[in-house]
Image 1 (cartoon, one colour):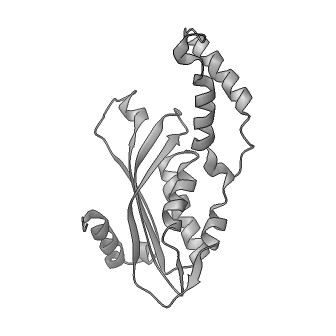
Image 2 (cartoon, rainbow, N blue to C red; image 1 turned 45 degrees about the vertical axis):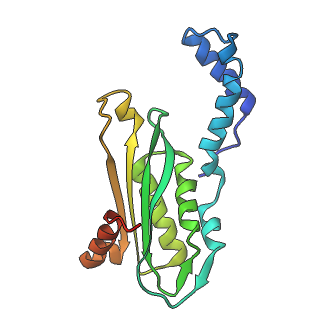
Image 3 (cartoon, rainbow, N blue to C red; image 1 turned 120 degrees about the vertical axis):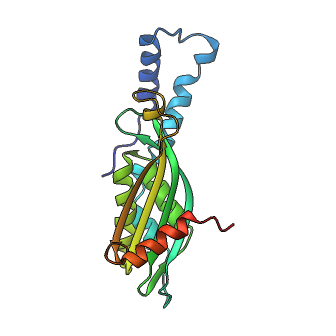
Length: 193
């Protein structure tokens, strides 16, 4: 679901109000440009709402007889938790087994970026990545694992700085075939380079 374009002026004004409510002097040197910088940052953080993931994927699908697992792992991402508006960040690992179609490898990290640049929860982001690949490529299977650290758990609440949340979405052969799933999990846990 797309959201309307960000009204930067309104966002800047609300940042000024928030700073005042927090007791800050919005006229002090260090805060003069803060509302503008925050508006610009949030425009980037939410840019995934304005990008059609299916369009990105569809632009780089190629017919190919290759039918072995394709894995792109250790894809860095940053996202914003929709519950506390705090960042979560980590690595995504994405795999698929082609069934007549492959995708340009750079589109997989781009897909992760599109879904991470939205207000998110890790569970939904994981599923959205898997579902998009599965729908566009119609592969034998798709596997996605995301490992992330959440500032909402690190800075507030339980304040556990070393905890990592792991989510997975397994579709097709990755769900149905334990051997396929285990091969994927082994590949992403192995450091090859």
